[in-house]
Image (cartoon, rainbow, N blue to C red; front, side, top):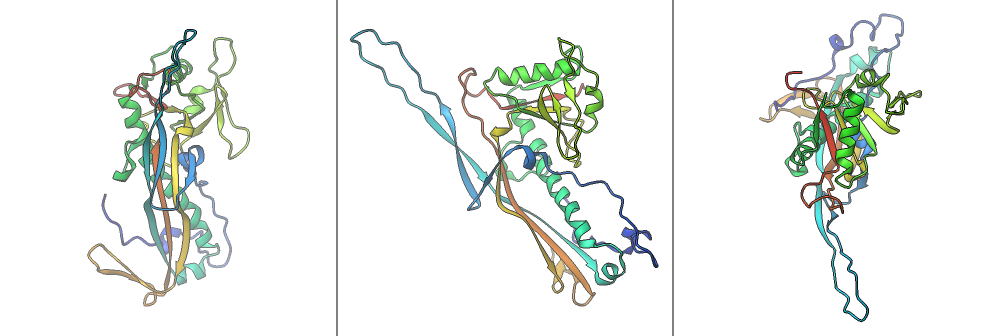
Length: 314
């Protein structure tokens, strides 16, 4: 991934509408989309960089005992899943003159866009392995593929059957599918689909900020740019088995002095000398998948998620 130390917001990036000569203008922009992992996965606070999450690895057994016979013994074992928090950060410099002449609060406008960018990084790394920290282990797509929990779109007579077949596959391994995530626009493929009883399988959301429903479970379309439609159409999962560890939530600090340098130490931006301020945003977050043993799956074959993948060449 190429380093970027030279980006800043200038007048050319804002356009005349945001720095008008004498009138204030309303900003019209796409509402930033949150992270589906931060929204749906189990969130746990971390008091250190690393945290250990015990996961059930072996299950106890029970035995019939004849009258007067000896009772047998059994044991249960756990394995550790390690969550390591890695730092996600960015610095956004803006010249003071641009802030002064703007008719909007640029800093308040930039903050939610940065949050969206952070969400995109987290989802891309956790779901597809894009720019993933090495300490995070396998991404969800890799883990599901290893467990053979994928179905090619078009396996059933329609998308509704594909979803049902995928959820059945995950359920047969002992996990309860309790939600979905998908590529943007999938809702239009789902509208009008019916189950065997003629009932709609998809119900669009009627309130902003709440997910739609697919087979009665929430469906989050990933609209922050992290979803790769060439790799997957839909994710079905037991979301309680995805763990997001937060060591440090998003923190914002505004600086009016200091320098910004590149990887070689060359000063690119001097805030005091160039009359500018810089917003520094930092978050420390980890991700792991808990994959406990279940009663109905052979050890090592189970996984709490699966994907509908596109047809080859689609």
